[in-house]
Length: 117
Image (cartoon, one colour):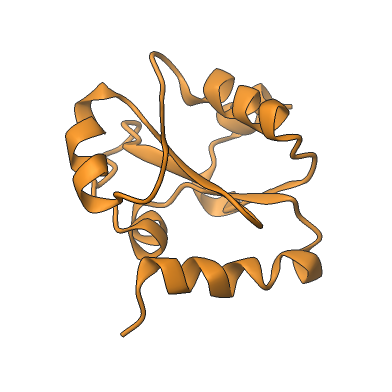
């Protein structure tokens, strides 16, 4: 069975074909598969977002999940949010210089999508 690190590397090999600088992984099962972070989303309460580029990955979450994230995804830098995800995600995209971000359309709300534009 492969590890999250191996899975990330396989995914990164597809970036050129996808035409993206980074991917935003929103679904909790996908996030777990690629990072090891096992927090479940409940309704509108999203436990985290996983941001992946060709050479970096970040786990964006809030203070409720800090200890769990450090334990379950020890190799991933944490980006902590205080309120909604959009400002933190947008700032991370800008800081990293990511222009084309792929995302799981069925797991990103219209509101989050519009806030990121």
